Every structure is written in C-alpha cells, then in structure tokens.
Length: 205
Image 1 (tube, rainbow, N blue to C red):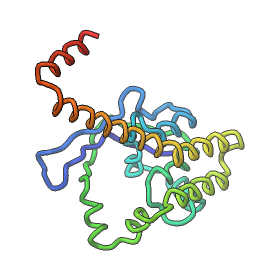
Image 2 (image 1 turned 90 degrees about the vertical axis):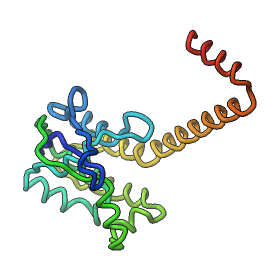
Image 3 (image 1 turned 90 degrees about the horizontal axis):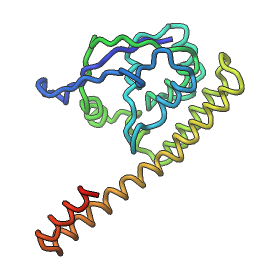
Image 4 (image 1 turned 135 degrees about the horizontal axis):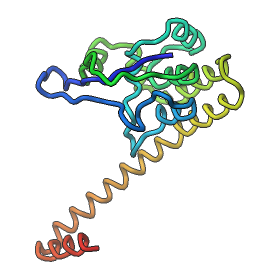
C-alpha cells in the first residue's frame, strides 16, 4: 500500500542541527500484520512519545488506495495518524532504509499559526478528540476491504488512543512534577552531605 524511508529532520532553519529517524528492528513496519501496524501507529512507546511512522504519509502511496481512503475518511484530516489508520487497514507497508528527503520541524506550525490556517484552529478547539474519534470510527465502519474482526480490533485501539492514552500522559506529567517538587524540597531543606549520602545509598540499592 505504501513505502516509507528513513528521514532527516532539521531543527527549524538551523542546517547544522538535525537528526536522522530510522525505523530499524521492531519499528520496521515491513512484514508487520494489520494488528501490529495499528499498535505501532496509535500506541506510544513511552509516556506521550510515538514512533514517527506518521511521516510515512510523505512516502509513496498506491494511488487507488489513497483515493479510496480519502473517500471514506470524513471531513478534513488534521492529524496524519487518524488518516493513516485507514492505510494500515488497507494492506502491508514497506520500508527503505535510506534517507531520500528531509523535513524541517516547527516551521509548518509557525506558518499555519501566522496564516490563521483553519486546520490549525481546529486542532486547538475543545472536543477535538471527539471529532477525531468520529472521523476514525466512521472511516473504519466504511472500510470495505477488512472484515468485522479487524474492524472491531481497530475500533478498540482507537478508543484507547482517544481516551486512555491522554490520561496516561497526564499521569506521567503529574509524576514528573511531583518528582521535581520532592527533589527541590530535599535540596532546600536537607544538608548537602545528607543528600550525597542518600544518592550513594540509592545507587547501591
């Protein structure tokens, strides 16, 4: 259905600051089943950090499959992953481990913000997650190339993506804040010698 490649991302307009994104090992989508592709696409690997396989939308996609998915996806696509869910249901993906293009980070958002792009505004609106849920579930429902079992599985993944993962992300953020608060209190109220002693003990344990 589609072919993606390794990608070089450049930090804004700073040509010297970049990093390469490769999809080696388990993150390589080639040979993955529909179930594995959906998990890799919609589930974070830690906290709120996703695999950047949404960038495969900038790869090579079969024209017929692209037209079909655009036809059954309702409304305007605001997040790549929501549309690529349908491409994951459509068939297998391939991967070429070569850097064939680059992209700049943050520049697009700045341009959209200044241009008052309606898509950017939709992303910032309240209940945007419910609109995304409706788009994905409607696309799954009308996808004629997959059976009921895969549709049910995809719907469950989508529900977890929309409702459970944001809660998990908030929990991670809260835990980090509490950890920083405890560190700050320890630093302000305990002598330096006591803190050093605690650090040594923790390392031994």
